[in-house]
Image (cartoon, rainbow, N blue to C red; front, side, top):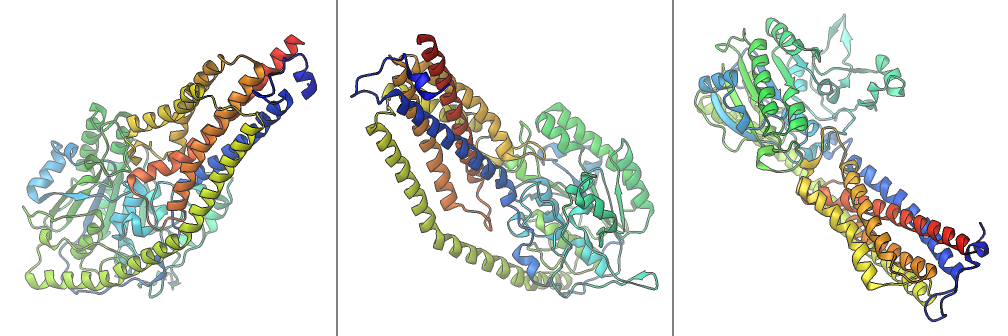
Length: 583
């Protein structure tokens, strides 16, 4: 129906109240288009956020690993490093096998690293590099990690590493260029230059039609483990672990994911979570039953814990505190780890095997729990300090340069945001003067706050503005979109209810235009300020509050814009139908 047809038969308001109906409808259509464009752009920004946190090549990867050899004696014939995914400290007690190891060795705790998600802290454990410096910040990291790892040190020493897991991402995270062979024998050695990796998306390999999956069989890459077993079937973990115990690999890494799955599904305070922990304990007892603790050592830890509701990623104590249990050869019974972190585990395992620690690591050897004499403990400490002198300087330099870049461009970004706000205010002023937009205070107070109050109240109630609100393998923006949809429904209902009081159709549509523009402004300005102060790429990981608020304001723009579009579409339909009826 043409614009004149829409407007004929509709009583025109006095000139001082509302512009001709055609102009009001035109303004509504313009705002509808602006809302649609804003929704698309903000949605794309929110969708990119988790991926913008990632660094495929962090600054440490651009320097050769520092691997000073302290030449300390080997303390254990073999080391079994066990990661029970998602096991928080307080729920790790009263588990028979873990408690038995505690009685025989070390009962301590370690702190996970923020963001406390799985892939970042697998890297923390096996490289000694926390998420802030490893570039692995979320569970969406999908490229091999180009940092020196515990497995690299083991193989460089001519030793062998093996793994068994019911979660296949562990070996994929540490894929390496295929080593040359001479007469069928692999050449051992440590990299003297930064590690260069073929570009490959380790997650895309799951899609059998993807280019990565098609090329994977012929990729010039190999597993970091000499024997890597993926065992996702019932009983497979215990079977694989038992088989590796019968082997002769010097390092065995075991990863068990059942506890994490129960935490996400039922929460860390649930009986199902306790049951999963008990099952994991029993599986480990079966898998490691034949380990000779007089010659071998076992270290058990977790990548993170779980909130009572289920979730991790933030800095809640139940998420950050994880068990650190050690027993067997080379372990000092009854000792306690002092201020231990997950990044300290790889240099400690290296010390048990008598090899240098991973050269990019930022952790230290927990010599207080090892059966070293004073001389050997000091040798390990000195080697750690030599390594840390380089790694800390590289990280500090990168952070300082990033801070300078952010500060240099912040004024420009703030200026752009301020200019955008002034343009919106100018547009609002122009539309008001042309009487195609009305700011009815009573309507605005009822309709506009409804979205923001409901939206942010839901985020705060469910996640307390912590990344731990994220579900397993989820996306922050996707989770917040659910809350945004609920807020949109409430705001739409409030807007339509408030608009009923308008005396004429044109006045009602002009007031709807006011709701639309004010709603867009209130959503877009905070998103612009977040971009000005926390622009990607993220060398610094935003704190827990901002890690939630940044995608939250981006999603708010998208949802508010969609809400504007829906409100105006409804009003235009109401306007057209009533105009047609009157005609």
